[in-house]
Image 1: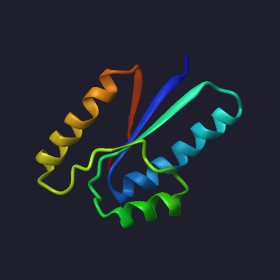
Image 2: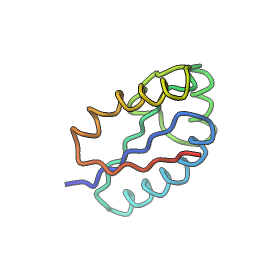
Image 3: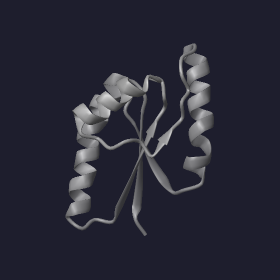
Length: 101
């Protein structure tokens, strides 16, 4: 069974931090490691063009999941993110790597 890693990102600094992490996982997968990497976009940058530019410029794939939490207070965004990833993380043996501030 593959080791599953879930990367969660939502704002420009997060995307910049996960790009080299994602690249490292992909290199290990090319070397034959059984690794499954899932990318969850929180949707805090809800402009499709802004997000697409981040992915293209940093060479990371489109996210597997976009939570589309949008704008709101810190508490509201955090609650929406937690609700959005709950089913995914509890439904799989995932190791969560948080690339926060």
